[in-house]
Image 1 (cartoon, rainbow, N blue to C red):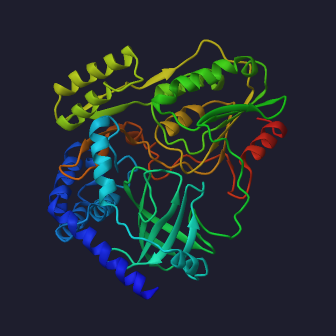
Image 2: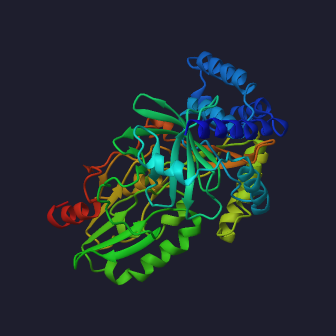
Image 3: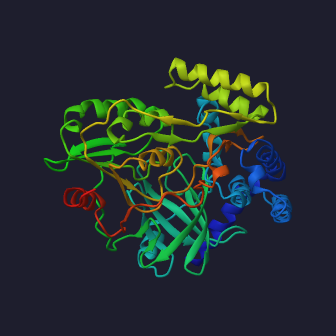
Length: 467
């Protein structure tokens, strides 16, 4: 085994050095830093007189470290660490979501850059008997079976190597995890299904590394949750269940169809359980079909302003070309970008503050439970701020993500590496009246724990409690 690890390290060192001729991490960081400073709508709030010294020091350290890094994944981890200064989940690094042809080219570049080494059957057999961090693991949905091995370079002490995968792009021998151990956590990078390196901090527990479960060890009994993003079913003769796993514009028609298909039930059943868990947001218009069933009184809506810069204008114009937008939505974006063009460097109102009133209140459902968790963010939180104003609604679960005050993310390509940087272009005026929720989240009315079956708890609560 010792010889195997040494040989693997030599192979990996070669692949790391091959990147140096392609892209320059120092130049990439400077480009990203300039874009965030100029076009991120939250920059002026985050970098103030009180925080500027800390920001400058943080940036200087990152700049110096960027001169020493040659591999793109490690460069990305460094930039991600720099971005943590802003504490904003709406600043992200990812793939190109609009230009499919460019993304296909970028994907092939990212696949080519993945480290690789071969595991023999005897290596796997040895790892199955291993103690400590090394061993054989499965991820939560059994997509990947990996071997965690000791494999040290300048960035990592351990590597997670694919043994088998349900995704054809991920083949045996590819490195999907790279990390160092720090007390009861491990820090490093985990590659997503698009081969984007994500900076992670995984909790070490008995037989688990966060979502990774050691092979042939007992898992907890998971709650049975539909794999469909949008779904619905009857929980009883009095309670209807609807799952809305995303407000992405691509699911807007599905959400509308779900509510139309259940119109008869919605108009007669006293209880609705709306499952928003893991809903990371999307487009506000996606939840329009839900609002009439929650409404009880005038809803106060506070609008956002958008920062007008060349990159932000280009980002909004690109969104106007995407599928799924109505002619009216595209027209609104074009009108907004015209206004932005005339007000470079300024904040421009997207929507004015307003009160939303509906002519009538739906008799049913009488009570609505909304299930929320720490992965609810962005437009999902915008919906929850609206829903909380209804006397029908009770929130159950855990705090939401707290990613909303700075929103409407738009992106730009890296100068060389096959990634996109995304940032928030808008700023909510809730901040000015002390109603911001970033890094705070929305608190549930009733707390639930991971050990509970949340749907069963919601059904029991809504059928036994008054409102």
